[in-house]
Image (cartoon, rainbow, N blue to C red; front, side, top):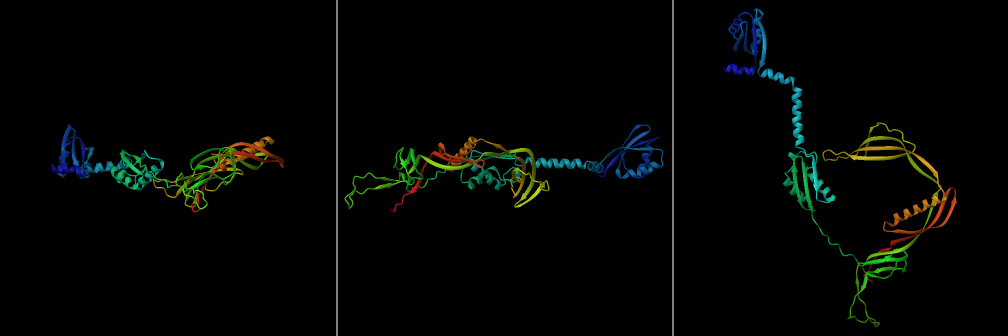
Amino acid sequence: MKSVKSSYISGFVEIEVTGKNPENFLQQCARNGIMLWEIKKPHTEQCTARIQLKDVNKVRKLRRGSKFKIRFLDKQGIPFLKKRISRKKPLLIGLFLSLFLFFILSNMVWQVTVTGVPEELEKKITDQLTSYGVYPGALSFTLESPNQIQQLLLEDVPELLWVGVDKKGTSFYLEGVEKLIIEKDEPAAPRHLIADKSGVIQSMYVRKGLAQVTVNEVVEKGEILVSGAIEKLNTNREEGEDGNEEKEYELVAADGEVVATTWYRAEVTVPLTAEHDELTGNSKETYRIKFGSLSIPIWPLTRSESFEHELVETDEHQVNIFGWQPSIYFLTEKRQETSPKYHERSQEEAIQAGIRQVKNDLLRRLGNDAQIITEKVLHETTEHGKVNLSLYITVEENIAARQPINQGD
């Protein structure tokens, strides 16, 4: 019985013997040392039996000198199983790789979400998480537990009052509360507010200090508008050597806004022929990879000829490998062909274009708080296809400038 069971390890086959008195052939096999089991006779001229794989060649030799026909019905055992597996090796390898890939993907961090904090603090938390190895693409079984990550963040990010770290499947969700750090501003040094340009006062708003001018008053550049020296009310004043009472002052940092009307004169030259560029629709794209200061073309390999007139746009993307950003960039350069167009404009159109240009330049220089009230053309001439303008512009702006008080005086 042991021999029969061990035959599965070495392998066995089921044979079918067909012929007159097929049991005689089986007896002949037994006499030649061939082990037989599960012998059956389903038909008068047919018998089946199982033999070990090693005896197959012996059975074939015995059949050659007989009138019996041998047919192999079934094959069992480890040798045949190995053979069948080897035939399906690609399928098994694919199955193994699929299971391995499923294991990796199911244990990979796909999303890290931070909520409840300002954008700057969110970036700082994200950078800190990256240093811990917590970023999209990281393997979750290599990371610390959520409680340990929470403790590390509270230690390394002092702006955090509290943070909760929750891992759900392949995602990390963090919710933080920012500390409210109230910084006391250092007291400003004593100062006056003076006029940084001449003008006529239109309105005043004094937060601190003593106003020295009034609305509709004309002031000159350098004149004190709001004083930072405020006289103290003291009934016990002593008289000086000249018999006058000595005054005591409290020095403060004057603060406020003084809006005044100011004036500017500007010169501008505007051509009567206006030029602008129009896109023709023709474009070329170049792709490059950049390592530090080295730039290598990807496509096309050779630089194509430039358009005579073109608009160039360059887009740069840094390579990101699971949160690691090496100094490698992909560059996309798009060159669009342009066609210069010209059109003649009237003198009035040129004047209006010149006024717009001067006003835009002036507002860029003065800031958004300034407001242009009026503009007037003082003088205009036309020569050599150009209009020369002399403009006088009225502006309302804050003319208050800070001037420190010298306490040694």
